[in-house]
Length: 415
Image (cartoon, rainbow, N blue to C red; front, side):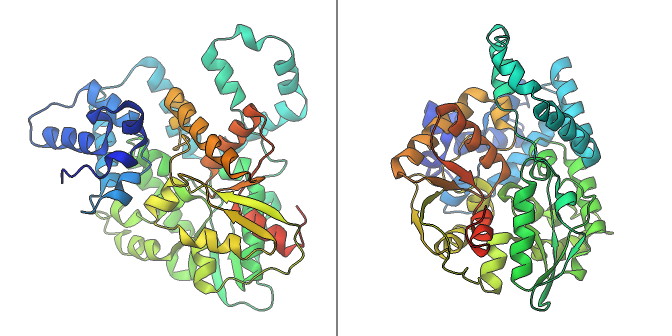
């Protein structure tokens, strides 16, 4: 397919106007390598990691080219060939991708340490000390991106089993995520509360595993498979009416376990059932019948930014808007380029900060243009990216998950 309809939708091509930075160009490179006309080189590796993986090209493609699968396989081949290896990169990947996110107990330990650092006032002291301007620019940028860790993690806020209010209609499992658990555990609590109000008995075990999206998107397919098996063991899909995710990026990956485990006879059939049972929270609420909150909430003007993997990966665009419009006294203003990437893209804002910052500035310009006091989005990476951007620019805008606005509406406007 060579039509190029994907080009105007690609943020990196839009910024550079270089063919190799477009989906069509990248696919041409992959094809040349597959046909033995090109070798896998470090330049090819750098190109694949310059891609955001936002999947906007898949929404634009009239032929239905599965760029996501091509993209992930290309990165896996790059890692297998070791073309981008360096002592620094190897250490970062070993600590972050393989060790830290391989076991969430380690991530919780790090989160607790950062929380202590913040609660003791050490972060504030560092920022006021005058030391930061003397540090390298990249260190200053990373320090500014340090997330605020929640006072309690999900397991401290949510019981292992939350009964349905008014009688059980459904039995669902709740996935609390990785960064979501540390930074947005309140969103997980709100999600469980809303599910219970809709007749769902919610199973939320305290010790969960990463979904594996970080690993699959960064070429670590075997680790992604291992984590998929752990999740299938912990959440047997035959026991639930739905398996709920409230993060667009995680949900997009979770719905493709059958491809990850297609060659595993022990898990293949269960993975197919798993894919059918995984539901984004907005998708599930609309499917079972969204219950409008009472008309007690204060007026607010809200705009909605679409998580790339929710919109382009899961094709869920109408349901979050339907949820927001169901909230009394809420005026929804459409965001220009609402499905254009904000620059978070997993860990893209860490490894490609210049492009990520340009995309963030573009997104915030559109947010300001709406005049909304609230911007809602349904992915932890997007939330953190916009929270940092709003803080840096001093904008009087609240950044929030749609499900939190719904939960507050059920509570009569209480935050």
